Length: 269
Image (cartoon, rainbow, N blue to C red):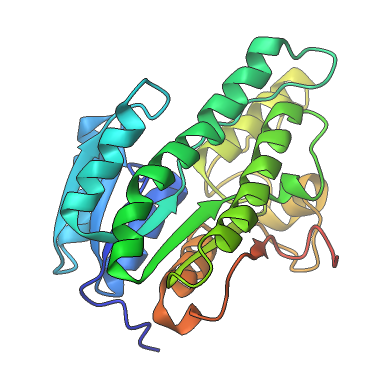
């Protein structure tokens, strides 16, 4: 299916690795020109090289979005790049429960996940409105609907991201710019396997040997860590496909939603 994205410009924050990199590459597969963002110059350049190999323009913008003025500068670079699609993907996660979390942990969760999304979006929006068409896509989490006890700060911050996405969609009514959120479930990434290994070590469960592609069967991991009707873990491509659809003109009538791509782990509303 042609998503009619050829020639469109996109900024994907946090796209030097993981889900963000896959989103950047899938948008490039659909013909988008992509501004790759990250903090590591080498990693961002490697993704931009893969994007450019698809035959589209690719550039890199660097910066820690939590630092003063950096988010705004990244957004201005995106404006000059011609970005009409903004994917707010950047956002750290950490494990803090209610007993162990400190005020600084809550602050870090919101400063890392909420404020950069606000700052980049606010700075780029005048350009999108002036153009009369645009997309703002945020990345939430399945923890929005089912808060994770060991990730209380992250769960709350991502809930705020979903809430403000709906608010933004209403604010942009009639402008031709839509705002939607994609909430991933448990996605296969190196960091996920590291986290599972760390937990296994802490619990003295010797012999699990979890690493990407070996060790415990994925279905077993899904059943134990993230039971869902689909019976598997998610892939970065699952999230990227949802983002690509919402970024496309085919999704003109989809606005203000949270699209859960989680294998059904959170159930129905």
